[in-house]
Amino acid sequence: MIKRILVLIVVLFSIQSFSQQTSSSPYSGLGIGDDSPQKTVEEMSMGGVGVSSNNRFNLNFNNPASFAALNFTTYTLAGENRAYSFEDDNGKDKSSNAYLSYIAVGIPMGPKGGFAFGFQPKTTTGYNISNTVYNDDNDPLQASLYEGKGGANSVFLGAGYEVFKGLSIGLEGEYIFGSVENSILNQIKDVQLATKYRSISDIEGFEFELGAIYHKKLEKNLYFNVGAKLELESNLDSKGNEYLYSVNVTSVEIPRDTIWSDTSRGVFTTPLKTSVGFNVGKTNKWSAGIDYSFRNAINATGNLESYNPQVAYQEANNLAVGGFYIPRYNSISSYWHRVIYRWGFNLEKTGLMVDAIGDGANYEPVDKVGMSFGVGIPVGGELSRLNLGFELGQRGSTNNGLVKENYFNFRLG
Image (cartoon, rainbow, N blue to C red):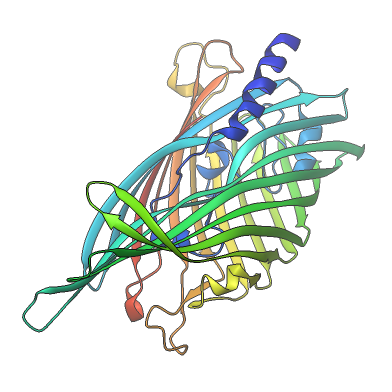
């Protein structure tokens, strides 16, 4: 076991230098990028439910108090493929990308405690948008290309402990690091050289969360769980450089003269986020739960504000409902009776608002709605599983020049 853990630690920290594009959404160019779901395949297959879950076989990223319930050393690894369909007033487009979702290890520490550590993407930036301006004769006057890439990653360490029968508490810390690059290339008709604006920002900071879960056994293997989590206010620092220079555009871009350059700084402040949830179920048979989370508006200052003058933030909340069902976990006659079947629904007010028109008076919310389902298939020994998850959803709308985004996510854990 020690050898396996050492191998995973080496893999975990070597991943820090590996950059992934985990989004193709135009919304990923706002702020420090799209938020990546900090949940396991099992949780996402149930709509994201998990604040009150303390399953002793699976890692739960929703609440560090759940680590107290671990009975076995647990290794988990997952990947995801996102397929997008975009629609705005100018037409439709499609895109997709695949990436590593997380890698983590959970280790029990006696009968009442446990801890876990791992790596997962925190935010992501990845978009490529072109825009051409025409005259009355439909001849192109100028063309612009907007591109972005990068994002922030998270390395986390958390621990949970059962302080007395039924009640567990937990603490988790994350170190967040990464880099985001955004650029605008503009070419005007009959002008020999194009102009390019480029910004590169390094992101760094820490986040901490506290959690608690109360587990109550009822009659005939029934149980009732209540959970709560506080994600403390955090500040992510953005430090970078901005450049404006001329470019000779042929088959490749050849930079010419630097017109302007400067250093920049900013702070991305996420206020206290509160999550509560409960679930009821029968051990090794079924479970159904509901989670609700809320927080005040995000605050972005410095370069993070100046880069996004058409962005504003408001209060955010999230409602998730989901559960699982196992026909017969110890069935000998039927393999499919031992499969875990999961389902869920998610409704999120993201807190992001965009003024696509640019007059400062038409901010539209960019909210999400989605449904999910999945299966946990037994593999090898009775404790190992291959988890498949599927999610269908929509974000944003076409109101006031926005982009409506339909997505289909496939997850494998």
